[in-house]
Amino acid sequence: MVQPDTIYALSSGRPPVAIAVIRISGPRAGDALKALAGRLPEPRRAMFARVRDPKTTEIIDEALALWFPGPNSETGEDAAELQVHGGRAVIAAVFSALSQIDGLRPAEAGEFTRRAFENGKLDLTRVEGLADLIYADTDVQRRQALRQLQGFLGQRAEVWRTKLIEAQALVEAGIDFSNEADVASDVLTRSLAAVHELAHEIGDALADAKRGERLREGLVVAIAGPPNAGKSTLLNRIARREASIVSPYAGTTRDVIEVHLDLDGYPVILLDTAGIRETDDPVEREGVARARARATAADLVLWVVDATAPALMNAPQREHQDCWIVQNKIDLNPAAALPDQPRSFGISATTGAGVEHLVKVLSAHAADVLGSQEPALVTRERQRTALREAASALDRAITEGTAGREDVFAEELRLAARSLGRLTGRVDVEDILDVIFRDFCIGK
Image (cartoon, rainbow, N blue to C red; front, side, top):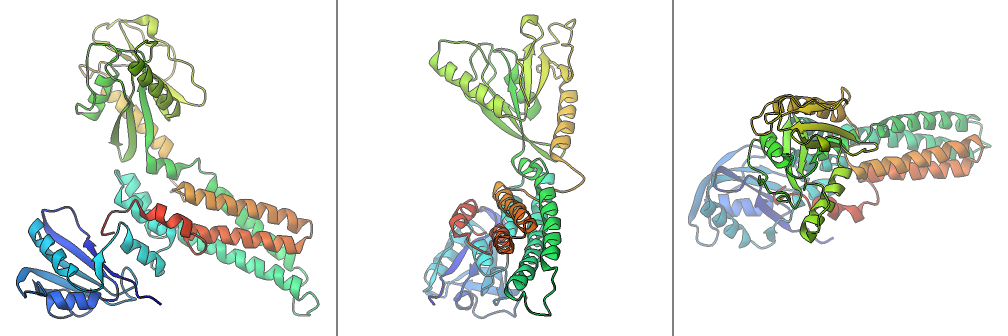
């Protein structure tokens, strides 16, 4: 077999930083560490080292060196780590020294994690959990990602897969050795009972209203309404920064402005959209079309109206979507009455009156939609698709088994087990690996 390249990359933050961590992984990791640090440390014990250029022997930096012989390393192969001072010149000099060693090359995005997966250190659900942990913006997202990294879904899937294989073995024994005395006559009944239980468990995992995916992506809230109602001012007030241009002229906002918020640990994506009105301006018309599209796709619409223009109070009817009325500019018309409907708010985006209450209710709504006492098992559409395929195969298996068609029953169990194998990355996932790892950063 062709020996894999030895790879290296900066695994810590962008310089300059106090300490920079440079990782090396592959068959020549030990040679690289000896070339730069003079010798190998004891496994998994930090050693003080003067890092030298192997060609000139010039000292580059004083650092800590660590050695992790495979397979007992994060990637499953020989790995090393240098903790150097985090200046740009130091990092560049260490990279230059590593590049002079035969068999070494810079790592690609996600390559360390991919090697961990290929060497059996992580299953695919844990890889996805690691990616989500890296990009988590809020505390609730962090907790969900950490559960996946710790095997919350992968371990459950392996238990399901083991039970499926046992059920499949039972029924196939009944088919192949039906005349043998030590093969029980009720193997199909026992196998069917196990499949019913598995179908129920997987069905429960899928019946979660996609909470895991929604938490990863965030609750999308569109601020919409007629022009000059104060939508951009409201977004700036909630975001506590000048994210949108505010102007007294109608049609200022042409494209959709997106702001990511952390509301009590829950991710909320706030959209400032163009004022919705009829217009002959082709650019503004495109902005209005985009505003309508984003508002339609949002989880919640804050329909902002002008308290001084009561004719524009009513929001359009929206099926299957939350729509709250936000009556702005109450400072200019204190006597304005709120519309007679639930979730109506009177605010002044300019002075801040009523905005704190609106944000508090919005936070509670995000917690209600995204939160739960029970953590979500499924956090990605890929995972949901694999479980759906497994559930469909189990449903077909139950139908075939109930009708006594043991051979078709066994085949459907095999297909269900294969779908669970795709979930964790055990079988037939080469076509999706590049998609998963391309979003990782270099050095991870």
